Image (cartoon, rainbow, N blue to C red):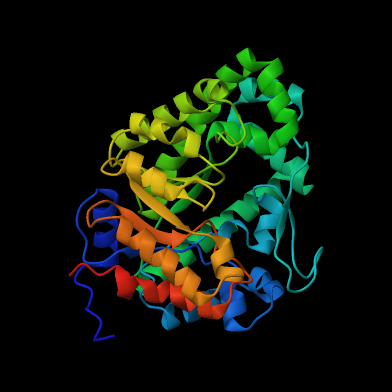
Length: 381
């Protein structure tokens, strides 16, 4: 291969252009590195999850090896063990404590929110109830939660500072949780919430709007605090893989539509992190405002079908599947990356990424093939 063409855009300008469906000098490269960084750097996952400086150094080593990685879709500060076990999204099992020293952390789902707690959400609001939920999940006091949240915000800023010093863009400035359907599902547990959907659906509709308003307000606050107008919003359990079109149209679609519209009015771009299979729901995303959101897919949704339906409407982030990093050959990963990058034309908004997190047990030679594909297939200048 001849000399690689040099970048002519900054990482931030490239990402903004991709979101706006405008031409770029080369494809945005935004894998979710997460726990793989520690393995790449040769430290245990216990060290990575419990020692912030080692974790930041490990991430730096990945970037130094692959500087074509230009957009940092980081997620560590919300899971970092010392704070995650006090204010993280759920009960966390961590390497070196509940798990072996080189195990992946785990989020344990259980019925932490009871059906009668819906009354508290209606009475006190979602963010106030969220503190009650965290007390129950982590078995800590409000004071401990507040201190951990303050520390998490400090770590988030440190992660932002590291990212910008490297010259990377922030894929998102903050992780603002999930769409309302997923928020309740994870707190109630999936089976209990699906029963609620059938048994007390009328009550849920009003409560989901309360959560929706809280998430929108949280996104606005996060954009002010981080200086980035892009926010991560997770969406998994409302996918067509799990619920009917009728329930999607009642409990998922309207809330997501209003959320994206209201954030768009504030010039805030939600990265809709749609894990699981959304293939049945792809046409819904045409109802959302054009070029005002990013659809992020994890390998379960048919990204090529998504391209057919949504090209010219929104940027799509994804989606090299986990199996191609772990059990395939580097050549097989390269073949998929070539097909993926080449399917999108310049200005059609591909943000090249792993399908959700890059697996912790990814083969290093496959990770190299992932990054090498940017220069091989993703240069437009």
